[in-house]
Every structure is written in structure tokens, then in C-alpha cells.
Length: 231
Image (cartoon, rainbow, N blue to C red; front, side, top):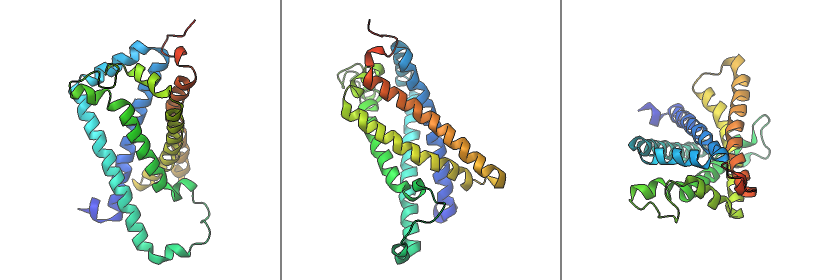
């Protein structure tokens, strides 16, 4: 199958799964912003998603896409290293007009994966997974109390710093990956190449800022969030 046997096919798989991940992050970021204004509204969303089979199905699909994306990323890296052979050690300077993110996508990807695992531990494990196991208080709070888990997580300054590092790596990874995916899928053209790059940078920046605002707001002023500002 050409999606597995050819380098172009593997890049197409990387592009499609990467775009799917960006779309999921858009939904997730939009959902998180609700917590800034309404604790009840955010918990309603958590309860709605946690009690429906299609939320579980969507989680499994997302997990599969992420795994495929990671596997293909390592696969492409190994293939590229083999293709260059010992010549890769002959490079003494960085090529011009090559982005830093492009040269460090594997490292950025590893940081993104580690951050994702941390995020799953802090939230998904104590919420949706707890409901699946029939233990809604496995994490100490009710599985549907997503707002409570946000407050609890970002009350720990270590987690706050780790999330900021994760989001920074995610920004670099996605800004490069977005226009690279568009290019791989052949949607760029001479005129649209720079346009897609600008569009991708703006879009990804907005999504990451949505995550970052929530993280920083709950780190520095948790009592002011969710419409429960203390007097």
C-alpha cells in the first residue's frame, strides 16, 4: 500500500492525522475557555461528554490518530537518517531559510507527547476513565467536576510551568506542521504558499493562546474564574 511503502504516502498520513489533531485541539480549546466564565457551564460540558458513547468513541479515534502520527513521525525520521547515511555528520552549518522548528520537529514532538501524557493523567484519567471504571471519585473529586480538576492542577506551580513549556513546544510543532501538511497535500501553489503559512501561524497562535490564557488564569487567580470571583 502506497501510504506505507512510499515516503510521500507516509507524509500524507502525517499531514491528515496532524490536521485532525489541530481540529481536535480547536474544539478542546474552545471548551476550556468556557471555564473562565462559568464553572457550571464547563462541568455541564464535561458531564455531557463523559456520559455519551460517542465521546468515548471520539477519544479512541483521537488516540488512534495520535499514535499513527507518532509512529509515522519516527518512521520518517529513521528513513531520512538512513537515506542521508553518514553524510548527515558532514553538515557544519545550518542551511539557510530552514526554520528552527523544521530542524527540531522530532524533539518538539517528544515534548508534545510527554505533555499530552501529563494532560491525560491530570484530566482524562480522573474524569472519563474514572467513569468508564465506575469509580466517579477515583481522583478525589467527582469525575464530572472538570472545573475542580483545573483548579487543582494549576494550583501546583510545577504543573503550571510544565504546561507552559508544553504549549510553547506545541506552538512550534503545529505552526510548522500546518503549512507543511498543506504543502504535502498539494494545496499551496506559488501564490498560496505564503498565505497558508500566515493563516496557519495565526490560527495555531489563537488556539494555543486559548489554552495558555486558561492555564495562566487558573495559576494566578483561580478564585476569579468560572464566575465565582471572591469578594
